[in-house]
Length: 294
Image 1 (tube, helix red, strand yellow):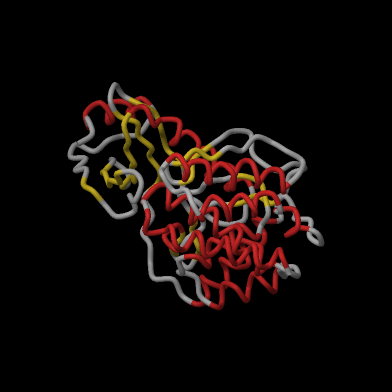
Image 2 (cartoon, one colour):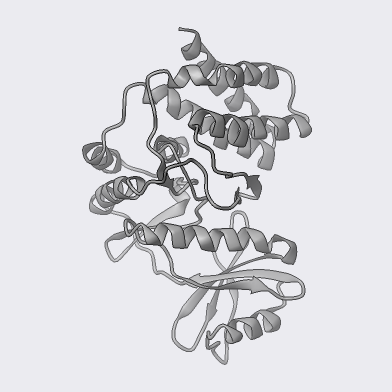
């Protein structure tokens, strides 16, 4: 249980007027961190907590939300405060009352995500590292997308998997993919788009008819990476994909690249949650390697 009195004191120092009865209680949305709702004198606040050693994860998330906000494309929660007490790291954002998405909000999200992806840089990466779940995500700037994805995404996750005891076919097939990765990009040069980075169905919602995205793992990379994640676990309807395609059509060969980008997240789930994701990871690598060999 967090040391709430110390957290409340820190929030007051940041100008947040805590209610006489803050009434912190757990809420959904804390798959990685513990999540809470507290009362202030003006409104409810959403707070995530972790051990103090993980403050950097919250700092990166705050910077990611502000990066997304700067694109003026999709609504994100307002960052109110983050920091650490003696034992706890905390991250406070505005409380947003969500509603059931409609076909209109799905369509709007597709349009707005295309606008977000047109917010571009000259190099791949970001100015700082962050996390994907609790896994480190390395974002050092680089000019080549193949180099970026090979070393900072694919090889890193494969190395973690090996350290976690997942060797054999996964590593053999993964090594072949890594060595031949550039063959997937023979006729394709991605734009360097601002990405949410972890856009699964649990990281978006609707509020007052507007889409809201949150819990990002921001960096600048191939926009297809975000689309791949939307297709991995579901949560996005046909109106979303049609609106995105109308706004910025996908390029030839994207089906094989989507599998590559899904592989990154499947390997990350393997490293975070264990062997339930092993067969899916091997299957994806085999399918990608088959497309390379054609």
